[in-house]
Image (cartoon, rainbow, N blue to C red; front, side, top):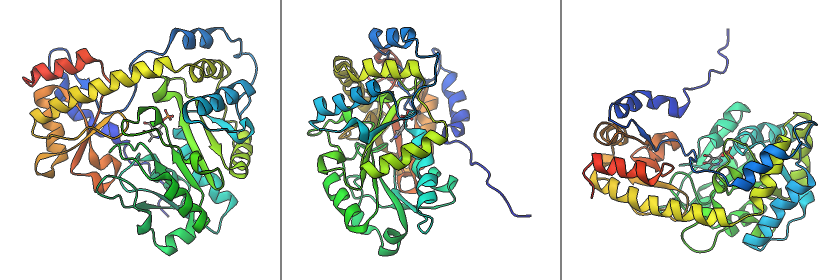
Length: 370
Ligand SMILES: Cc1ncc(COP(=O)(O)O)c(C=O)c1O
């Protein structure tokens, strides 16, 4: 009998033992492992969620015109882009989009079988390839955690269904040269998918989107999870190359993938407001600085990231699990060992500054950080 697919343990489920150690502290575990927002959504967003009446009928899979127009309005306002709402479609948060994409591209182009993605990255890029029975090929990063597209072999490029990039990057906060990436994709006829869910948390220079470099052969992927603290509502979109957006949205309609109507109404309110994002940026930046002091106190000094809300710290002696254990035991705090994001990150830990200042202060007190 041939062995079928067995899902590997979910990365964060592997932290249960460390969580139990951290929980022994008075006040319990401070969880900085999963990047799940804990700050509130705005009152307007919650009101829209509760009062749209949109729960009655089936929502449009591509998103209502109001949803798509609110999203293009945000792209125009914040990034000076002029995107036609016809070239943008909703996704149910972006994780499902990332996980399903290889399967949908492979159905259309069965002679290709490879997904390219950054060697240290969000694990779902590789998992999506695996779930589609495709090859997951990691592309190395340079010393600033930027994708090194020159390292992609001709054979992998010929076989590639897609190249994923992620700017600002999770977990290391690197900023890619998206113009160069778009040009590489066009030169090799490989569609580029640019995951830009941390775009509002760009700390170094102006925010970057691949759509600044035209839409031919590229798709930008965005989420309200981080921008607007709506991870529990599940709302995102993808926009760019008209042919790719049309194909993907047609297949996804057949699959019944829909952002619930009330969530679409809430998303319209969220896309329409920037003040709450400015407040969230301030919160995260302040917390990154606080967490940086904490990491220095356990001999893991690190730079602030160029973007995103993660610290990416090299462990003393490169032993990330030992550092995670020290933090759990002494600080009652849970962080993620870097191997969750790829072998090339296995000597680092990722610290998600998603808990309140009071929670970070609690960790600082436990570790005698002033
Ligand atoms: C790089 C990256 N992409 C996509 C996602 C998925 O976010 P969501 O499915 O909530 O939109 C995450 C979540 O942590 C992420 O870090």
